[in-house]
Length: 350
Ligand code: AMP
Image (cartoon, rainbow, N blue to C red):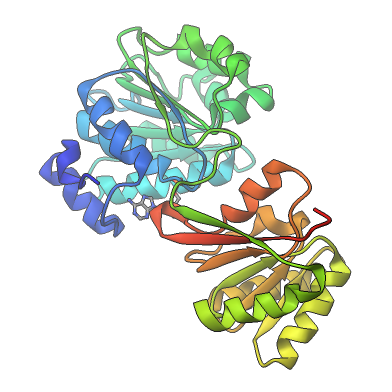
């Protein structure tokens, strides 16, 4: 694996990497950073959780300097949701904190006044959701004619949310000479067709597209008679450790009964499923995140909401019904380049 230094980032950017606490680049960072530094347009297929934010923020900020005119940022990131915008802003602020560049986030759903004031004072890096950005452009609170690097983040989601016309208008307000970086969880034919005109001869980086799993997760299949699954689970917990483990089951009843049994055996386990109140679910997740509960026994409904770092491994007590649920389930482990593994039980019936 290459190190951050080998990606070609400057000493200042490497200091930012250290501030962010990253040791080595994730696969998408390893491949995207050198291409962005070279000045290529880029299409990257990378989901949230792969380290994509730093994959574009580090080289984009490394290639650019301060804005020459106050309301004319040189880096623009367009992203579909407020949460993503905030997350990107945090990363950009950490990168820029060493050099005094100004990072501004403009999103809908909050008062516009403070955002206008901030823009009037000047910004080098702008992170925005499409609707609010268009409003501010209409009011001449911001101009995009100095943008050198344009990032379109979660492009597939922006398309799904009907933002394509807005994105087109935003892109049209930036100079043709810009560098465009497009990140998307998936890049299928329909996405390509809709975004191709926005990019110039882009390099393509494909890390984990739809249906593929994170490549840091080792996957095992155990054939086991139905009646012996609890015993196999116990043996795995005894052998591989019982801390930070998620067990996925098909039904709420099975989640409850497996938990009862695990507790009887002395494990700290808690169920997570849709029959529990929001409070109970929040508490279960918090306990798990804080290490008060070692094992979470969950149904698929909630698999997508579990965002806990460093899950040691995942057990598929029941196989999921559809492949995408499998990808989501085992995506809980091996996040951001950490090692992880997944064990799936296959009973004769499945
Ligand atoms: P993202 O895909 O950008 O949403 O990033 C997912 C998570 O991975 C975030 O919590 C980042 O802080 C973390 N992360 C990004 N790059 C690295 C890295 N090189 N090493 C460790 N963690 C990282």
